[in-house]
Length: 250
Image (cartoon, rainbow, N blue to C red; front, side):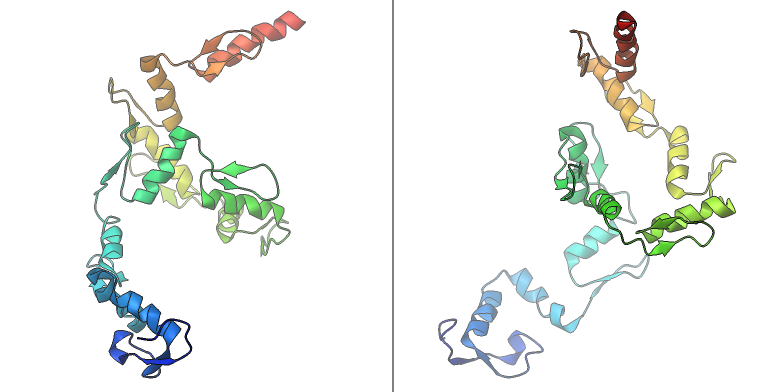
């Protein structure tokens, strides 16, 4: 086989890469095909499907189709309760490794997504995208009832409910209803209290409250006064303490 980039034509079987327009490809292209041939058997078996558009893996629940078995397996977790990835810090479980990695940033405080226009940073790309819209002058989505404009179609939909007072999301445990799904989810957490302490069984509706509670077990006092050596496990106690300093200045 001629070396890649030599400029001499090299015969390549058509069935190696379905869809090739001719039996003769240039050497540099042939070397790419050779890389496909020398890859793993799984990669080679799946490779032709990327050209044909064939999606042999179909979900019996919703009709979703996938080219690769790995992608199909990930999709099936949306229908089941399988959450194989677990956080070693708090026991949080996730269906996908990427979701667990994102969760871990709540422990590390890592915010890898940074704004190019200001010093804002965030743990999630979606949050950065929303923030960047604030810098952009393009707000194509306009409310027909007031002067509200936004760069996000979803935000406009949420805003429109403020005019019609439509509360389509209803709680299945009480008569509460909300205009936004996220608001309903926050309410339902009061019923389920999904965040549980592994030490004593304490349950709460908010992750922040669980974090505060865990400090009663560890003795950690992360909130420190900037004017003296006082420290506490709870922010509200620190705020109460600061009032004393404010009184001293009067």
